Length: 40
Image 1: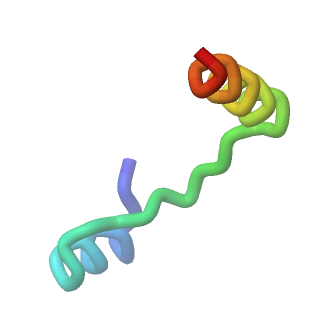
Image 2: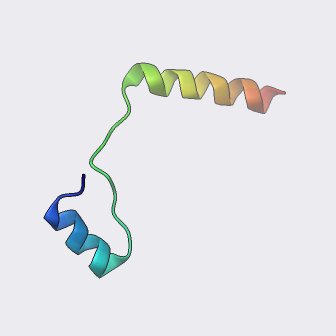
Image 3: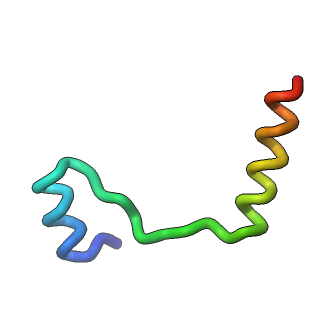
């Protein structure tokens, strides 16, 4: 759910950067999968 300030930012700027971060374990999984893909 967007906060009122995020809705206002969207109307002003046309986009919103979510206040959300992936955990370290998830990022590590993504990095490993990316490295495997690139190596292929």
